[in-house]
Length: 300
Image 1 (cartoon, rainbow, N blue to C red):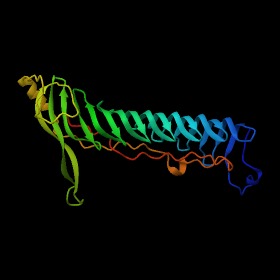
Image 2: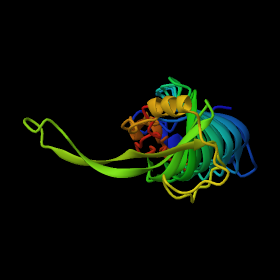
Image 3: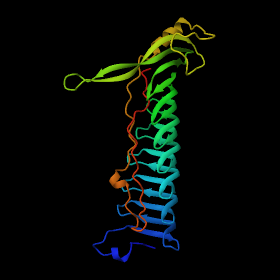
Image 4: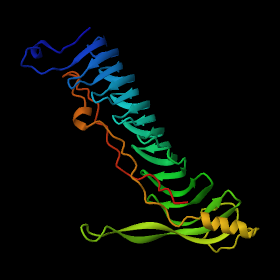
């Protein structure tokens, strides 16, 4: 059945309240399976419970964004897929309309993140993969940034160490496929940016690698002290291995490129208007994830 609202709103001067076709309960509420067209052009098709989106459904925004998944009392909750207007996509768990739990995000530049989420942000254990190089960060995240112990894996070497507020910091080591590793630490260094003429110079802090000794491969300990600590059962590498490792060792990490922002439907388009005056069923605007940096790839 088609529902255009009550008679008092059907004259030309009244507001358009959208359309609904589907099941209702004895109280006249949308209940069961139905299709709705909202006043702003958004559509929903799926399950209802006592007038609210509840269960499996598909919500399509007029700017081509869409959500396919589970609802709980009008909110995205459970397993679902959100496809954003720029083509990026999230597949995974939702709680109270937010990415929360385990899920995978495919970014518009083909990078991806798979792991834990908390209130729309990467938080917990996760893996971020760079599509252009195949390098990946494996470790802990806090509020969208790398934090604590982690590992950066590249084609022929990897870095094990610690991150603070998204940047490498403190003791760590580079492990090379040739069978040796270089110990050292990342120290914060202030560096001026800007040409000093047209733009005002700005001082930023970047991590710089302070290289220590080269040894045979050892068991990684996040608490290990930098560079010149004694290593048990140390195997002295050959001169050829020392030369090769020294040539491959990074001097400093590359500056972080901004991670593509997870584009959300504009608020004016994304927030559906009331489906019916008596129900006031609206889907809240998708909060945009703050623009943050992906883990910085080093120059190695």
